[in-house]
Image (cartoon, rainbow, N blue to C red; front, side, top):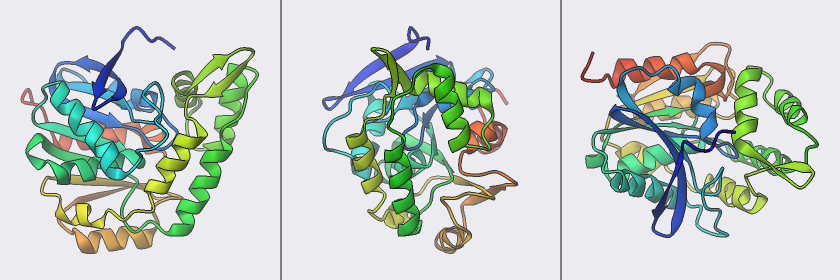
Length: 273
């Protein structure tokens, strides 16, 4: 991958890798478990003038630090808020997918004065424990060696059957590196275990207490957010905007980036509009 446009910030002893492009209203993009900042390429490439896109490798992922401990929801949220301060940002929109959606909600609840609002993509409180168990098995099973780039993409195509191959190629470029004669994921098993374990801590208080506009986007065929979980979220916060993406699974930023892009334009327009 091209790494010359990546930047790094030290946030309370944790190195956070990010890509910063454009000018205007700042938007932080936060990926899901085992992914990296490249999953947002389909969204950020659509942004025109008026937005500053900052795509982040969250702790334990990509080229950011991978500490042995420190994967609670508040650790992740602290990194987000620390990066906001480090970059001197104001009126920030947080756009998060899965893990990133949870972290965005928690960060917005912790320090609402710094956050303009949240777009939470396919993760909510009330996700069932068996879903998290299945996620853990799937994520930890993804740590394996590959003989070449094409083999990685083929594996990802089997794992994410509704995601376009071009998006999978971006995921492979950003999320894997060659070590010796083989390619390995940048996401380490210990970090992934800590990350998934953090999902077992409820964040419904943060969801109930956030005082900034929130758009929730769910895939109609999501294997993570059930209809039951979505109903309970709507009962708790009926004032949030809820969008369902037809015939789409969990991986909306890559499979339907135009939906995320449109939600951003509609709910959080720039001053140029």
